[in-house]
Picture 1 (cartoon, rainbow, N blue to C red):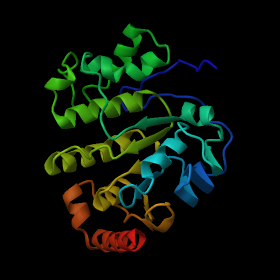
Picture 2: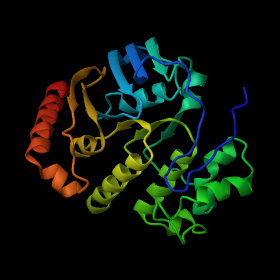
Picture 3: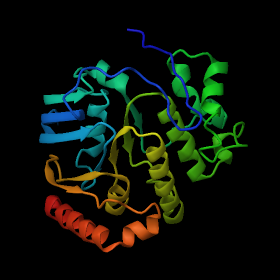
Picture 4: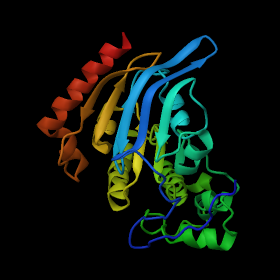
Length: 277
């Protein structure tokens, strides 16, 4: 089925109109019930129950290889679960979930032969928007994303942080209401990573979306999320769900050193160790 290709950009915010919402459970944009998933005899996910309210941000942390990326692919409709149910804004089939979700993988996946602008516009081009219109719509956001002047620059000439901004712009401009972010800053150095965390927090505050984000960094997950689900080792189960301290300072360094934040971080680390056993 051909998707609607009408997309509008609000230049005063990061807002990009996407598919209209379908019928959904009251207050829940993403609902996961009794989810199980297996690859042949390998059990990856078992009896998972999670819910994300509209415009909520859920962080997922867990041991390496526990199935976090698989869970994002299931939510985004790239795979169908072996058992249970995933509802994304009323859509329960893979195609429906995919039409409502934009997945940003661990690597930025920028095409080296395209400019930063054409990479950012790629999501619109894939939806059938004409090249000139797609470039115009994506280009309006370059200044707000700290990319002004780099529209014609190829990915090889961009810093790691700038490449991630282009990748996130491409994800956001798709217009989809649910974003699945798979360790978006894993490849960056510590200083750039901290800067990008603050930047992403501001971007999501300006243009709220429903977000499910995988991170191997507990501090990052707590800073960027409203709630964090700590997953066990394979097969993934929820060990504990924690609410991030609120209100949080816009100053990342002040936020992560606040005693309330530190206390929740220690609880998350304890749960992570418990789940890894």
